[in-house]
Image (cartoon, rainbow, N blue to C red; front, top):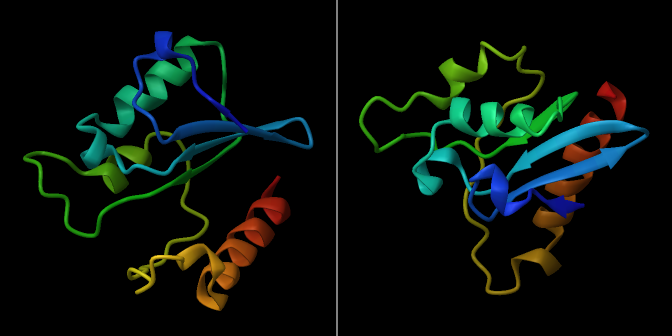
Length: 115
């Protein structure tokens, strides 16, 4: 897993993972938190001559910034294969919880199945 280079003009929390020679774009800080549209992020990645085969993108259920519609913008790049609503895990050590392990395992399985 590698963060995208600063020249991409993308904030922290956006990574590129290569699995089985397939590029997976991971946007863990949702675009509204980055104050960048997903279109800007995708265009910046493709400007680096990287074409994601799959993307895992965090999206706020209620996008608070005017004219943001990440899910709608993503329709220009492909189809959604999995969408879920999640809630905060009430723990300072959330990554040690069973709920976290289930979430990661499920996303990993879906990703491997689709590449």
